Length: 163
Image 1: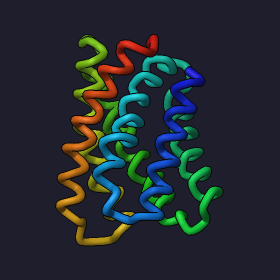
Image 2: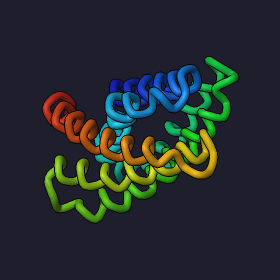
Image 3: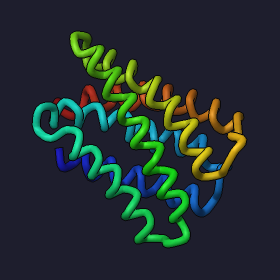
């Protein structure tokens, strides 16, 4: 699981620093490649940590990603805070759906929970990072990119990482 934790942190930090550097224009690419990876690896970690401090471990992981982003680039502070809020909210949504689907296959659980968590993350992050009203094209594009990217990452992780 150390591999997944490292992968999760690397993806969230890279995504945060890319948005801090290039702004909303990079959001869709980030959503597909990096954030979708985080949403899906979170589901693998959910399996690994279930009954063993899942909530506090995920909270610490989310906070660590934001803290590392800020420490590497202090001007990324607003993006790191937006990321913290978005990942926190989407983690709750993800866990609720993932748990409701517990009798289904891992791919169904991961993809089912990713759809809702992608929507939550895609609304919360741009509002916190770029303000109100939301950039609706970014929000909708991110939901689609995270859902499609999440399905791809779920397929990869289902074959490469043991639960």
